[in-house]
Image 1 (tube, rainbow, N blue to C red):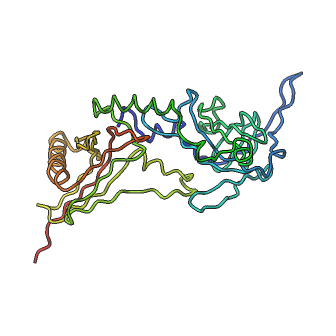
Image 2 (image 1 turned 30 degrees about the vertical axis):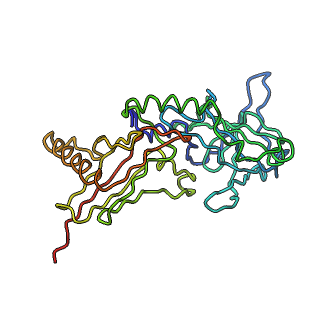
Image 3 (image 1 turned 180 degrees about the vertical axis):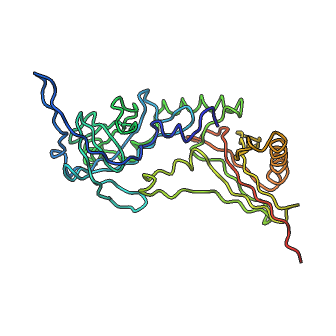
Length: 319
């Protein structure tokens, strides 16, 4: 996709960072300075907050690689050492230990967060990164905004799902990105609705890999979004083979070879050239002939994007 790895992009602040909870120790300031106090959640215990937006400092929920910061959290402070967070996979709230720090920083659900604002009606949190054994208190400049459920219902008279809709600014940004990507497919970006591959023949089986959200991955299946990956099995192929490579899918559904997904550096230039030649031939023949392609889209706007494929060929079984 890019000059930098998309999984690295994800780690620099566009998802909540999975870390081990670290209890911070406080200290008094110098002479005349007020002693720092632990953040107190008691006045807000029991209030159900739902996240309504997650945005960067520039106000956008999308970055230049097409990654969308989705507001997903629902949370309730239970006590000063416990917070309840909604799990979409379990369809239930799960209690997590809450470690309070200084300067309004706390840790919950394997994430470091800083309270920017808190009232009984709303809550604004900033995502904090961990660097080694310390925290980057400058933050990621990614902000999570919550409203109390009662405030949404009784004051705003609306629904959380409506408040979560992308903004007009987001739409204009995606339109501009799409125009560039459609003029040059190599300027593609990740599609919110990934390009779809469908087999036209019983000879070819297509399946998309999916990640099940769990506590181990912090309920984060974003790899599926950033790097849509398909397994393709071709039966009755001319020989047994296996190739892994990326494909650009343009806005018309056309396929364009990207690059191999295996390290060919130690194999020598001749092997690398042969691998690219043969895998390109597989795409140009089997994949273009046997697959229907629906291009990816974001906010309903069709644009060029990239997918990864693992293609296995199997010769016909001997009779």
